[in-house]
Amino acid sequence: MGPLIPNGLIPMDWNYVIAIFIGMAFGYILEASGFSSSRKLAGVFYGYDFVVLKVFFTSAVVAAIGLYYMDYLNWVDISQLYVHPTYLWAAIIGGMIMGVGFLAGGFCPGTSFCGAAIGKIDAMVFTGGIMLGIFVFAEAFTVLEPLFDSSNYGNITLMDTLNMSPYWIIFIFTIIAIVSFGISDKIRNKVKKVFY
Amino acid sequence: MMKNKTQKNRHVYWNPYFGGFLLGLLIILTFYLTGRGLGASGALKSGVVTIVDTVAPTHAESNAYYSKFIKEDESPLNNWLVFEAIGVLLGAFLSGAFTGRLKLQVEHSPKITSKRRLLFALGGGTLFGLGAQIARGCTSGAALSGMAVLSVGGFITMVFIFGTGFVVAYFFRKNWI
Image (cartoon, rainbow over all chains, first blue to last red; front, side, top):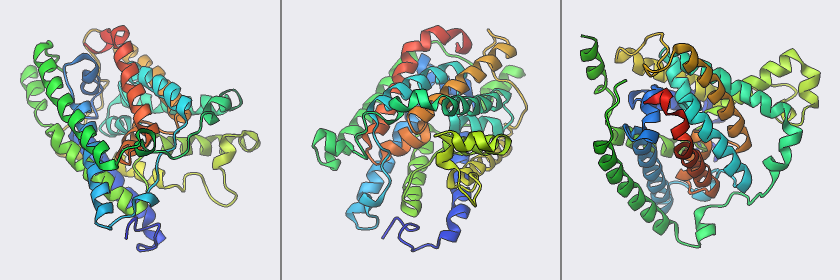
């Protein structure tokens, strides 16, 4: 039963080889979907291109349905999967800073790798900026540590917070995603086209 | 001629639902194999730790953040996310090569100069790097992989990245539209 590497079904030696192949698929999908273009990515915030919303929500819904279905079939033990921990205020403040960074720079880390790989100089500079930001964070860690470590709720999921079954949560999430796709198409038809 | 090329390029990208579906399958595969999700900023963190540890080892070891990632007998670059990020570069390069999108250029709105675009890219990247450390992950590691396993923190980070984006979009409009 999965996950295969932590359960010793695939030897640990394969871990980095698998990492490169998974990364290649990740980069290929992002670039082929248009995530190497900052002007295409920024479109979601101005209503002229919703590729970010569509790819992002589709993949999250597909992944959540698939993982919970595989758990149901006993192919994977969902309790063994890593759940990103919830540090409430760090998630909020960090998310807000990333939001401003997204609008100013037009990329996020994964997409800037894709842009840099096909020769976008703005993406290379953005990637350098990320490293600078990490450096600033580390140097200011004593000041930021209280925020970084505060309000720790552990590895909680929406089931804990909403007290609902995962199947209902995924169902509602899927409906929200589909409705947002419909609304985004309506908005895009009304917004002036931007060529890039 | 130029316009023709632009219009043609617009249609060579995949259908977003197809791309999203494949990305969803990839996230499933990644969790199924490794027990964890995808990531991006983590690889750059390893890079920064390695640089600082090489240039100023005593400083790195006395810093409470760098020292979390420094091991006695192993480079911080010996990390799953670093190999994954190398793969991302290769994969994106291949996709760009197959579709004729490989080109050294600064992409920007005709309303702004290349210099302005690069300055904002640097500033935006710096903020993104800072925010991703505070939130323990970026759009890939925290938001996308978090949402796939219904992590509360993943959803909160996603809502605040995009929510803040919509709030500040007005101030950056000249850069994009």
